[in-house]
Amino acid sequence: MARQKGKKENNPLVKEAETLHLEQLEWDGLTWLNIEEPTERETAYLAERYPFHPLDLDDCLSKIQRPKIDEYKDYLFLVLHFPVYNRELRVTTTSQVSVFIGQNYIITLHKGDFKTLVKLFRECQIDEEARQENFNKGGGYLLYRMVDRLVDYCLPILNKIGDNIERAEDNIFERRGMSRAIEDISMLRRDIIAFRRIIWPMRAVLGNLEPKIRRFTTMELSVYFGDMVDHVDKIWDGLDEYKEIIEGLNDTHDSLASNRINDVLRVLTILATISAVLTVISSFYGMNVALPGGGDPAGSSYTWIWLLVSMLAAMGGLLFYFYHKRWF
Image 1 (cartoon, rainbow, N blue to C red):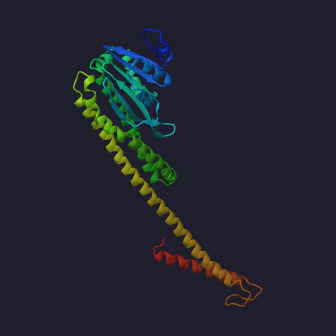
Image 2: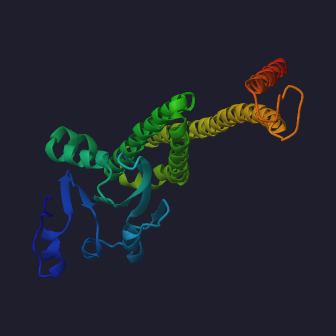
Image 3: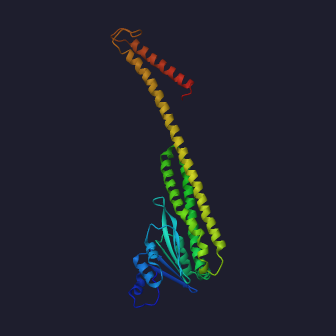
């Protein structure tokens, strides 16, 4: 991790800056301070250097914040949530990025889950053209570039959910995949619910962001933010579509499972009915009395043949009757 560079002062918090999780990038009078895995030590350092409200600094460390914009005289404070897909657990989780933006600085605090944000910082570090493109138009434009990349980062996650839905659909119509289908559907439903819970409050925050950051940029950003909001709406529409699809797949799975259970029960019922008739015949001729076709009480081979023919005739008659009724 790169160290924060600056003048050493007598204040111990400033001297401690070299050991904090801080990375600083300056260009054309604009400073981007990136903080990964923030702790109380980093927020204390910010409190010493910037006029931030203590509640905002506490919100940077809180895990239960909702997306919001707090507007102050000298700066804006933003809390933004975006989805992060865990490939090992196959689950979509929420990750938070907090942003302070002023006239000549922008500060981001996050857990490091947003690879696209880290990649943008690295590009600006090593590429002068990238720094010029992102820094020369003010902090407002740099913030737009960050948020736009984070929004675009949601699209591959959405596409991944779509691929998993197609795989679950194939498993539903394969007998060997039926056992996994219900688990896949449940996990996909959980991902879609989590994704929707993240995107819904973000739509309002991003829709109201552009008017509030005009004072931090030298260019008109309404068209840029309009395009970004369109992307968010596209993501929301995709989630709505996937929600309907997964509900339909769940109903289809239940219908197929019910039909297959009915098929099994129908066969078992036919077998039980035939077995009951055969049991009656065998029990009837098992009585210790003289019966027609039963022969002498001591037993005879003709008796066994008579019972076998009777059972086969009863079985054939029942199967013919069930087939005639279209019960199988």
